[in-house]
Amino acid sequence: MFLGDLSVSRDAIWESDLGRGYWLGSILDGTVSVEQTRFGRTCWEPGSAVAFYTSEAIQVQHRALKDGNLSAVFVRIPDASIDDLLGEDGRRLLESDHSCRSDPCPGVISAIAWQMRASTLTGIARRCFLVAKALECVSQSIQQTQNRCPLRSIAPRAYAWSARDIERFYEARAILLDALASPPPVAELARSVGVNARKLSDGFRDLFGEPIYAFVKNRRFEEAKRMIEAGEHSIGHVARTMGYQQQHFSTEFRHRYGVAPKSLRAKQSRHTED
Image (cartoon, rainbow, N blue to C red; front, top):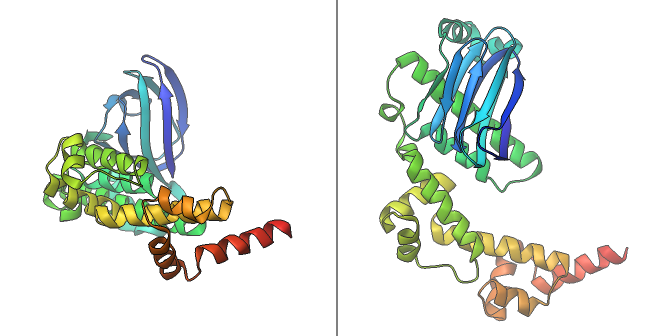
């Protein structure tokens, strides 16, 4: 798996070698011209789902078509692993498809890619999540190859959003993370990213797995826990920074983590001394 963000200049050129196997990915931000020794030249842009199978290693030349950020998520199934994962029928299906698709994807694979990029999990939990989402991407792409029909007709409601919608939901998420102590009302947040409040609420829950209110509350306490463990500020300061009165904050913190903020601070201090 590759989850990457690059800062590129227009007309910048770089090359890469791609190993044998099945490649699948989504371009989340930026536009790049791609020339492959096997498939020729294609243009990859935000909302594009790229999928191809190659039985031999190929060289790829990339050229940025504009200044700014280039963000993408890619998954590869090595050729030697295809039979174990997809079976003989799966291999025959991939080998029969000689195209390199880079068509705009109506939400499904792009949404999964955004979920992978936005995950806040760490360690083994993060790896499990990414592997599961990578397989979900593969299953959707395989379904498209089998049916040769638009992904929207087979996509569940959770992914029935356009690439532009998904960008707006992600923009709203960034705004909330920058204003955890005093987040804007949903209606105001929706206006700032150019959608209506109902659409933002539904799309946010579909993409990030929780309602806006729950997202803000969970991120607040995650950040508060980090601040307390780091010993950066007093408990009162942490509570105010997260938008709570200290008593309410301490009660909610203890309910959530099974330990009072002061006890956690004392425990961390003892560990530091040791």
